[in-house]
Image 1 (cartoon, protein in one colour):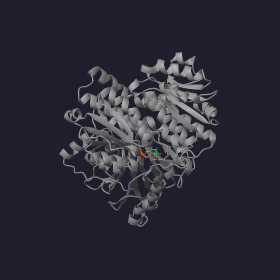
Image 2 (cartoon, rainbow, N blue to C red):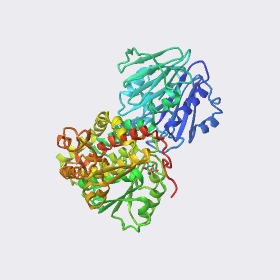
Image 3 (tube, rainbow, N blue to C red):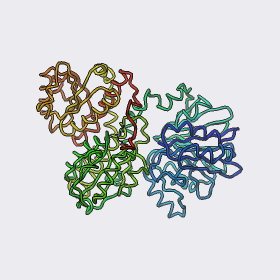
Image 4 (cartoon, helix red, strand yellow):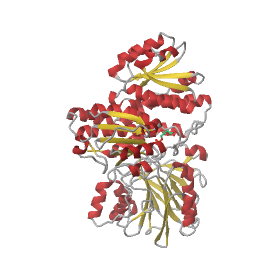
Length: 608
Ligand code: BG6
């Protein structure tokens, strides 16, 4: 996700802003910029690429004189990574500059309104609407203009605002994106996280949603949405930089597991407007969807497993046959493809060599392509006819978690969208499933909240030689990803196996105390999976069942239970994966493994 910083005080702002942005680099970004106020002018410097380019462009900040300014590292969501899309963004009259972390969900309508009112846009970003609204509402009172602007915004933001009329006064505003004020002596700061502050001060005010801060070198005043002052505690930052980068979590992977409800919400919410699904400029016509007679999903690793889980929703709702192929296999398999084939390419990085090669092979045979990617402007995104971005923000841990669940949420979104557009779903069923989809972030949070026993359970697995993950249908798909998570971070051999297939050979491996994790979240095959639990128990297995709360019938069968919140079977895989991610995490932690950087693995394999 993006990072914002701000400074006002007695020192030169430029070098301090650059230093702050450097501390936010770990968050991942593709461009950066600073704006410094001096003698009624704004010096604006923006670059694509690394902060070092900004150091060079501004001579270490010295080429941007002034004692107040704002800075930004951008993780592109709307608009490619370019200089003109980088923040800060300026108002048309050049008096205001803003930086933003978050997503303005209603930016398209606001952009239209502002263009009609004569404002012109320099960028493709959602953020730019904010600075033009501030100019529009400004009548000499910056606080009122900022509050009024934020009243027009839907979505998430941590905002920083600078104005030439008030050279040492900055404003900041928070809604659903972290924002912290740093309190110095004769100087004050704001930043997206404490890593950018601790070199200067450990006294901080943590802003809450709906709050605004007026920041001068000697005072910080926090207001609520009515403009009334709010009394805020000053906290002492005790974290070191390392801990701060992980938001206080011991590992990026745990932080990213906990970010999943927010990441799925950020991915889904902007695409559901007035109970219709919109694919932000990537829409299909009904005719185009009706022309698809086969869907081929291709990816690698967990992205492939997301495809395996999402396939059930697409086939059940859109009623088009779906096959899911490993990209490293597909590229050499002489695939049967024509112009009626829709190829869905899933990739967190958008740079995986096998996935790109498979995509090119299928395109050359006439397939239409839809990419599901987390990195704006990546190779897969550039090659695709259409791209639906996941808005998970940067994923630092090598073993993906929020990348997987946001990919799966987009597959669910597409399945419902295509069914609706082609009239293949009744209104009532559509409304029910749309509500279920909108509530998935809450279900994920509930799943996290129900996982408190997992650290203790993990101790049972830390010293085992192998673990089986079994299930059927959507449960079998979730088992694939659950087994991979266990393998890649705890190095324990883990195998996912379709529960109904065990008896045809593999059950020979089940012996006394063999750990088996049985996924039982699919009502349509629940009885069958329970029979498989009985089968493996009869051979001495130690069974941990993952199932819905109150599914008491399994209590008598399994040795241990993990409950997840109930949700529609078609979307169950995204909920039941949470405890499996946590089980792998705590098992690896019990073993003392290098969780964020597992041996032999890379975050993105850009070679064949
Ligand atoms: C692997 C990663 O290297 O590549 C996995 O460790 C990932 O987490 C897989 O699922 C595919 O990468 P991408 O970027 O194409 O999703």
